[in-house]
Picture 1: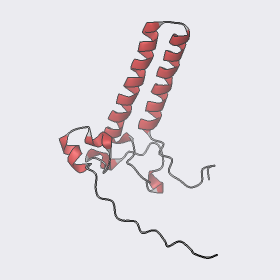
Picture 2 (picture 1 turned 60 degrees about the vertical axis):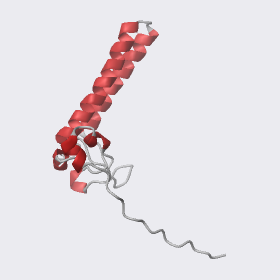
Picture 3 (picture 1 turned 90 degrees about the vertical axis):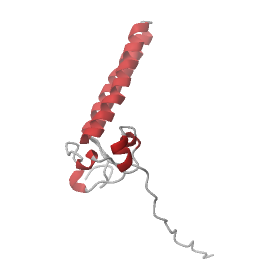
Picture 4 (picture 1 turned 90 degrees about the horizontal axis):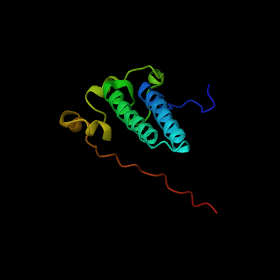
Length: 122
């Protein structure tokens, strides 16, 4: 059992890859800023943009995760998401990827949630 309890933290290949690339880009831009090297700042920011694009493409390829909790069998970061081919419901990234996925990933009405009545004890 981890320190976070029994929860799905969403560690995925897309998430780890994007995080590592973004950290490299921010570090490079920060070092270039301290050295007053303007091209290096732009290079670091370019790596950050590439990190976002790479993460999005890996998500579309099935190496990310859909919104919400996953089954415990799918918690390992190396498990590929087979539902990504058709698009995830309520996923902005899937809607931005084209009309076929946009139709599958269109927001769906959420069921009404009834809240329990508050206890009026004194």
